Length: 510
Image (cartoon, rainbow, N blue to C red; front, top):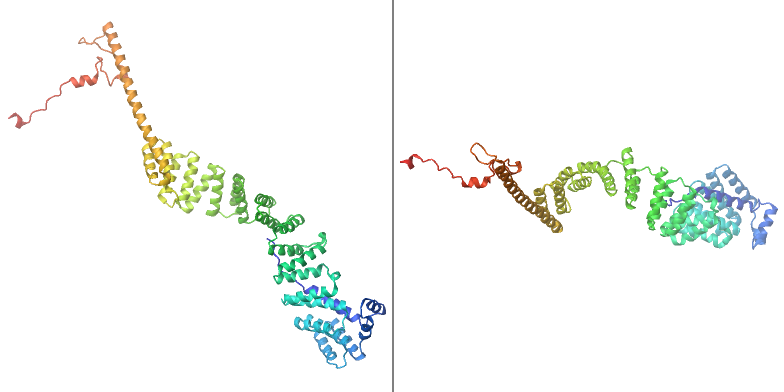
């Protein structure tokens, strides 16, 4: 944001002081007849003033000597010379006024501001100065008060000049001086009147940067945001390549709730190479994220991290990883998330990595990352992490491990319902698969029984027998655990075969 940084009255003060002094000197015995006639016509007491505004020969010589010394910049010498004149008992009010004006100038030029103010105030108090001269000197005195930070007296002196001289004496420099003085005195509401008058007196084409800064300062202090916006918009249009103007504009847009316009202003700055600091790029990337353009923001942030403009810190990598996640660019998010997890060692960062790996269907790696996250701890909702681990294990067809994870998840109230639901589902799968196995076995047994009976009938018809005369059938491989080569059920044959008695021990035999 552009801020008001004060002002410098030195050059202006010196110029006006010299001008006023020159007017005073030429307004007396040194003035031309035409100038004296013009002066007499403009003054309400022209006849009396004309009679009074003369130098005696003695004082005139002293004043001329002092003036010549000042022209040669011998200011201290001129002070000594003028002290002689002021010490003269016969000096008249006009001579005193001019002598005080000149000595005040010498004090000013030698940086004795307080003495200059005193002399110029005393010159006014003589009553011998013309109204126009009094106005000029009150303005000069006001400026000098401001240079010594006595803003209240400075303002009073200049406003007294306006009251004496009328509104026709108000020009842009005077209005600006009063606006600046009120600003320095922190009397913003009163000073705004003068700031607005100054702004109206300056043609738009002639306005300089300091002029805009003055107005912006007042609008900032008085929290007049629409007026700030108007000033800054003009500055952007007038100096479109200056970064500070765009930054002020973007800041104001955000302040009034025009966040999307602030985002556009930041984009313009980036496109035009104005954003050169890491924190500026980070802020732009966050704008992209906020307005649901994470892919573009991540591209910019990644490029600036790789170039070194944005520091490769854990915080910035986290921002980049989150933007890739927001864009659902899992493949690009995973390497960054892995870096973040390795840098921080935090369970929460391993959890984010695990989720991204799961989304990218890297299930085994995802399982490992979930386990790392839970082992490291510090996770806000461990129950949810256990439930996700159970889901990964289920997809890897590791049902018992999945059940173990869901049992852990069921320990937490917020994940219990989900965990119990998955547990019921897995147990149902196991039961249904057991039922299917039993049904398939029963069907196989029935098929084998019917098939072997058909084979036995065929063998009887064909007379297929072995050397003992027993019917022999070619039992299918899938039934070989149920029937022997004679077509007899193996289980029944085994049950009918007597078990051999155990051999007698010596004690039993005896």
